[in-house]
Length: 271
Image 1 (cartoon, rainbow, N blue to C red):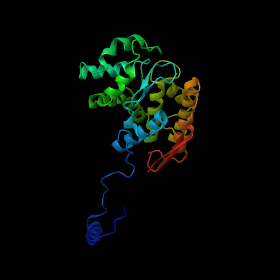
Image 2 (cartoon, one colour):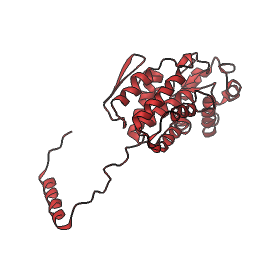
Image 3 (cartoon, rainbow, N blue to C red):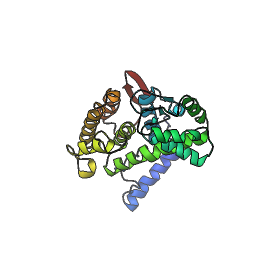
Image 4 (spheres, rainbow, N blue to C red):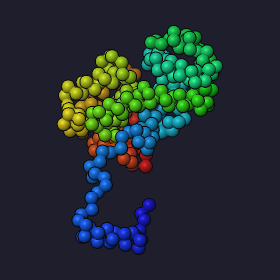
């Protein structure tokens, strides 16, 4: 909303100008080249959650995804919750362990032995038939929602932002790291986040090493696309091609709205 000048603000401005003539130039209290907000700024983090949700759940309403659960046939067993915790990749087990530590006797606690057994596989043994319904029931509990938020931050969001800041990249760059670690995890295999980053560093320098930010991020996204194409379940690269690269081409390194993008052909907007 545009706010017109008031008499008071004009008088204040004139007083400052007068003071500068007597006391010398006014010294700015904040550097004009202050670093942009990190992805951990609350407003930017909200944007990040919506961007990931558009790709993971075809919706900007990420808070509606606490209850989400299905087997998408990618070899990871059940995928569920706001970040796609998987029964086959250990993060779902850690989430339910945290929830049970905080709230013993919760509706999911009885599945812990089965979750430990199926960890590392796509098996549902010991989980069916009741686990999906019980997950949706647990998702109504604010303690389980907080556990999902906390595990998302501990395992994915905070490490991505921390590494992004260390590499000297801004909000968009930190988001490219976050989206990559959400999809690929950070294990030791060739398609993990750390391996994607190493592949990029072999070809381009990040800003922390004197490199150009846009050049480095394009190189990182090239490495990300390569990693996605190694697995059939992730071979659609539109979350990079028609989302992240759109922002990068516009040099919107701070992810400032309005934002318009597409994922899997669907259009999204944040005003």
